[in-house]
Length: 174
Image 1: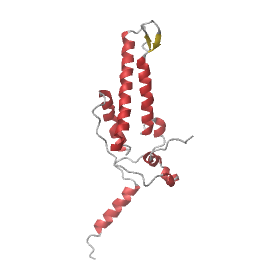
Image 2 (image 1 turned 180 degrees about the vertical axis):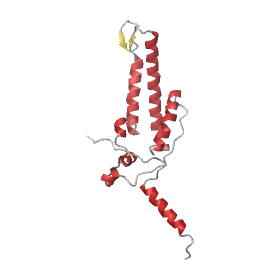
Image 3 (image 1 turned 90 degrees about the vertical axis):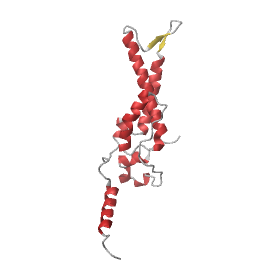
């Protein structure tokens, strides 16, 4: 049986793994630019709202690239499906408070679990999988530390120092 699913290096870096186990970072991995991909037009209204809400947060952490478009779209669509099913269940409960919205009476008179509850639960499971992939659950966030986007990291600071030294030396004749 294989071990746990590999964690993306970006999450490992945010967790500080490179300080403890530098050999666990794949330095030859593809490093696409952190950017917000275009929102797919087929998403529902609620899914598009979630896209607009979550993209800036993920991009600011460097966890979102154009390559993540499909995974993020799947998360947002699952979110939209979950929110819509939950809203319908609430509406059903408000229309008939004496009846349980979670149960549904078939044409034979049998009580079954409302199919909307199954839709909501399945969408919630799908959302959770994507949330952990992007480091958006409370437990996955406890292992992440980030530098605010405005503050350069150590490497960027070093490069800025070198660039400023090089600019200062342009007056030197060879």
